[in-house]
Image 1: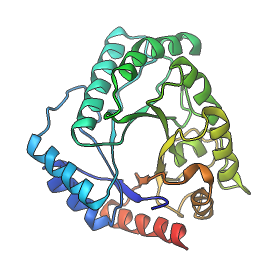
Image 2: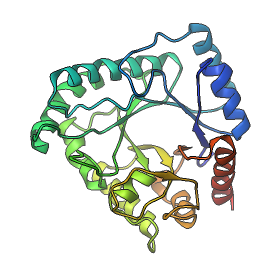
Image 3: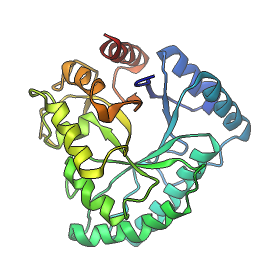
Length: 283
């Protein structure tokens, strides 16, 4: 399939039992899950029975699965405790990703806190994150960097910011990109302009090379381009609009790359967004 379309699914009650049931209701062809509380440091051992069922059902249905690491992770933090916990939390997400057969683990690229320079923060990213990448084998998920909407002292928000980040991590073979359309739009790439989506994807490929884009978070934006606000909207109802998503599907860099929605509106909104993206893809 050129681009499986799916969503981030709730998993309280069981990865397979709750998560995949929700995915079926969405008509999802790909799924993303949390394997720990996204807003806390506590890690969860998970349920081997649910893990096995999730893996088996995803494999049987040909559904690629992804993990989103907790939001608190920040490898650029000036606080030693945060840096250490970030390592533990991401290592946990990567291990759980392998256990459930996930293809990738998405992590936010973080920010330079405490008045640090970007260079100092990226040196710490290298020191803390590179060993985690080196631990990964061929059977492990890719580590997918997700840029931010550019709030505060973000280390990576524009497409070219991935360059120094990749350099800090030696362009590790297990490193990839998760492009969030709302984030990159909010950071200042006007996807809604003529060929805006194509130009942005071209810039990304120029920066990180071909084959590094592994996942797309397909979200419209409640705010205008360059607003630096991370507020997702349903597909076609925000400032990005439908047309750029159609353009996204035809770009060579997105060939085979799954799209996951993280939009508002509960199940009804999600069903409609998955349907809309499939129409844009197949139309």
